[in-house]
Length: 265
Image 1 (cartoon, rainbow, N blue to C red):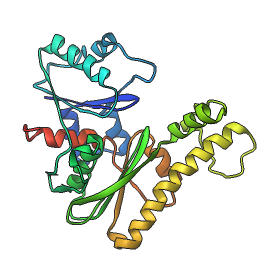
Image 2: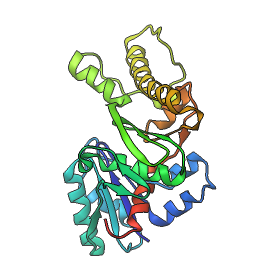
Image 3: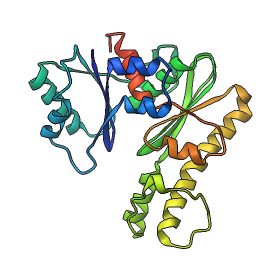
């Protein structure tokens, strides 16, 4: 058993390799799949003691594999805890030129965020021989296109749902809003209070960016295109989108599991 960690800007998502194997069995609903993964929130700060408590009951793994696009000090805390608790060093992965059937189309392949790369590796593994639009909806929303041959042609990055609202508070002086995601039942342009105006404005912006990309690529490649979405805001955006988007929770962790099997990262 290995431990797999995806360190982002706000959270650490992690799972045991044995649970990722269960996830790949495809016998679980998206909600059940999501339950196989764990989250450590560090938006308000994180200490080694919190990390140690998280992994105290985890059996000693054979190795630890990390994707890190977030704050470096968090990965440093994790490495110290793993070395002290289990005596193991962490293995960090990065983006490649070619890996698992995908050719990296970036001018500088190493510049591509490893989270985006791993999500594409996982999507291609799960849905081979189809053109793919891989959407990761987190702090930032990334929208990446892989053609039917496996060539990653490029993508775009836009602010995520929460990031849009935070920027309005910080840069425009609007009220800070931390919405109850489960309570979002309306998707409207006609809002009669500032809070709803901010929430629905941010949601429309996020959804519109994704829908625009899906429409563009569907026009280009037709019905063969499969749009997949992962990330914390994936279910919310998918709920309000007019397009059918396939929810694939924990794509980055799945990709991390796939490349960790190579043992040459």
